[in-house]
Length: 99
Image 1 (cartoon, rainbow, N blue to C red):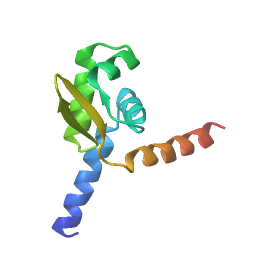
Image 2: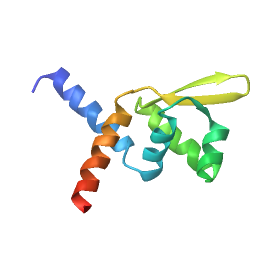
Image 3: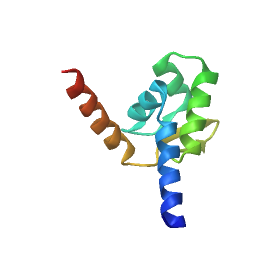
Image 4: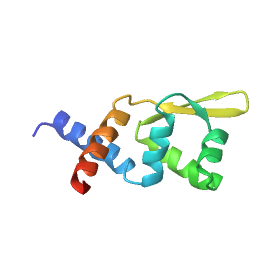
């Protein structure tokens, strides 16, 4: 296996690991339609701000999310447009398994 292929496979594993938490999957799903502020995300999920911030940081570090600052607010959006599609495929496979 060449170095480039090893790097790609390693990065794939990092992305999949970053999606390995139910709240992170829900955040990606919530953000697939549009960018939202951290405040909106916190209010939507009703969990502690530190929990949301930690999950956002993991998703951003993996390249799944992007962020931008506007005034005092930070907005997050999906940077890897195919990730929500990937999650739909996984959900479909899981639903068939339990059907």
